Every structure is written in structure tokens, then in C-alpha cells.
Picture 1 (cartoon, rainbow, N blue to C red):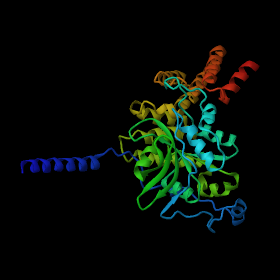
Picture 2 (cartoon, one colour; picture 1 turned 180 degrees about the vertical axis):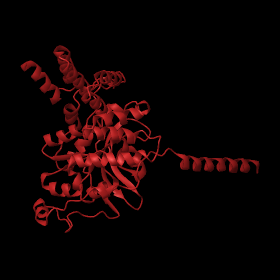
Picture 3 (cartoon, one colour; picture 1 turned 60 degrees about the vertical axis):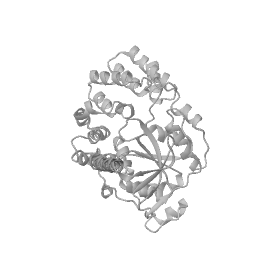
Picture 4 (tube, one colour; picture 1 turned 180 degrees about the horizontal axis):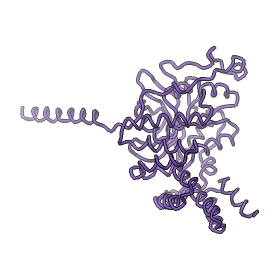
Length: 377
């Protein structure tokens, strides 16, 4: 009897604790009511759709139902720090092009170190897009994605690459492939080169992972699917419109919680792309001391805004902090320092920085051009 009483009390404590944890778990400042009202659809003509080989409804886009799942011909598990190459390998396979993770890694992040510290860790969205095009396909990278957009693309047979954290409350950047959803369960279905295929995330948890990257996504498609992709993207086929909408969304999200750093960081990156550099650094400075330590490993717009404003000492300080924080193989940061030295008339120092950038990524075109310009002048 005593044992039963002890068990009952323990169970009650566990249940009470579980309810307390669930009701008091950290809530990132995200909009769970999706913001599709600002994304106006563009409807292609029936002739365009017939020419593209897509049998769509008269509205131009298949409307999402209760669920959708794009078939993945193969799953690929990543090797060390290779979520980008593994993800691209899977996506290319969708369209009948077999390219190994190893081949892609040698091109996308050629400086690799299994110990991790001195290792190229960052593949930006624009780089992913450029490499897709190198292999003969089209790609569009945007921000301000939402659940409804993912549902539209997967309903129309197009998987979506997204940039997120690997896990909630961690700060490791990660590429994923969204390939479906189940509205009845309110889950996104995605393939993960790190954790496996057919992973399911609640809409809320998925948005929590996605928010720190301004809800960035990449659409990979064949040229004949261009009209369909443009119709789904609507007004945000214009990249500036996407950034304007992302800024408005981040401003709204910043009002949901005073504790969340991500809306302010998202405002900073959006302001940079809208060429409002002072507001970019102002937003960044509001949360700089509270950002995850790896935040600038994956998004450098605040640094670029300081550069645009001519605040070079600030740039050097932040760059040194990033490079000394376990991420020395960061070509883009050496490039920025080189550009500043060049602006200051210090050609030898600039040349050293551009050479260092190329040492860590021999395919980095910006550094190649900068070195050529120094040699020609």
C-alpha cells in the first residue's frame, strides 16, 4: 500500500512537472498565423503551362489539400560538415542528375578539415543557387518563406531547400529538404542529411528552426517549370519585395516578445539588402550581446553594413572575434578585410587577405577578381 502511494505521488509530480514544462516552454517570437496576404500570386497563361508540360488547374497552381509528399528517389547521409553538398546531391537526383556528395563538397567547400576548427563551414544561399546552375538547372533563393508557401510548392511536385538551425536552442546551421506536409497533424515532412528521411516537425517547431535565417529557402527546378515557380512566388519573384516583406514580418515579430533576438537580427539583414545600412547596424546592436555565438558564421550582413558605413574598426573587431571563435576558414571575412585595406590604399595587406580567402576557397570568384585587379593595376 505504501509503495502504491509513493508511486502515485511520483506519477502526480511527473505529470504536473510535464504540464508545467509544456505550458512554460520557451516561446520564440514567431508568427504562427502565416503571412501570405502580402504575397500576390501571378497566374501564368494556360498556353505557358501547357508548353511547360505541367498539367495545372485553370488557376495556374494546384491548390494544397490535406497533405502532399514529393517522392525522393534516394536519401544521402552527409559526411562531416557536408549538409550543403549532401542536400544538393539529393536535389539533383530528383531531376535525374547523379552527382556525388564528395564531388559537390570538393567544389562547394573545397577546404575541409575533419577536426573542424580550421574548416570551411559556411555555404551561403547564393552559393547554393550558383552551384545548382553550374549543373544545368534553375534555382531561386528567397527569404520570407512560410508554411503555406511550402505547401504550395510540394503540392505542385517541387521540393524546397531551407536553411535552419539543426536543432531548437542550438546554433548550428543546416540545410534541409521539405518534401511534404500533413495538415491534419500540422506537420512538415522533410529529409535531413544528418538525421534521416521522412522527419516530421510540427509547424511551430519548424518555424522556430527556420526563423533565425529570415525564413530563407531555395527552389530548384527545370527551365520548363519556370512559369509555375514564378506563379507560386507571386510578387516575391522580385527579390526586393521579398526583403521588404521580410522586414515587415520581423518588425511584427519583434513586438511578440522582448526576449527573442531573431526578429531584430532579421531586421538587420533585411535592412542591409534594402541598402539601409544605418538601420541595419542599429537593429544588430540591440541584440548583439545576446546572439548565439555562431550567428555570424552564417549571415554576415551586419558586418557588411558596418563596412558600407566606413566603420572599419568595428568591422575588424567583429571579424577577429568570428575567426577566433572556431571558424578561421571563412573566405568572405578575409575578402571584406582585403576590400577595406584596398580602400585605405594598403595594397600589400589587401593582397594578403585576398590570397588567404582563396587559400580557403579556391573557387571564390570575388577574391579571384580582386587579386586580378591588383595585379593589373
